[in-house]
Length: 143
Image (cartoon, rainbow, N blue to C red; front, side, top):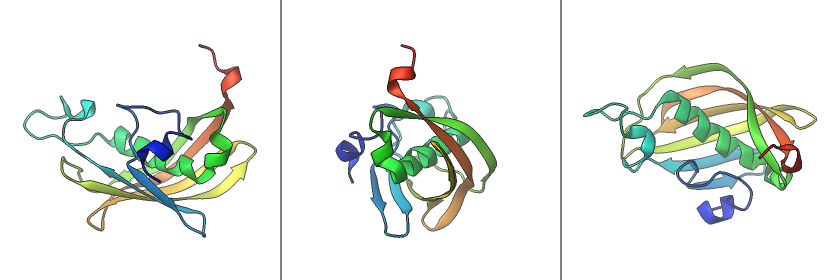
């Protein structure tokens, strides 16, 4: 799926849509890509002269990619973080890098999903961790 197809399921929009493409395989694994262009808002001051993608943004990239595993359940709902555990950062991600995300759901309890995810650049591990997110019906959101 490309960005426009992803927008049919994820509520995120630019500049917070951080998935360029995603493929879902038969083994319930999401394989997604995000290319760091260099003009993203989160690079503006992180760090001048040495732009590095913040770790929290790498976690968000993994979460958005993982959400596509349950894309049908996203219709009329918004995914929210419920936990981030055992996250490790192994390599910096910089402008020009293409982040490859691999994730899978390891457990589900109702509309709460527990995910293992990792992000790589050029086959080298950048970030890995366990993410938990909950789906909330849009009609229950304040706004």
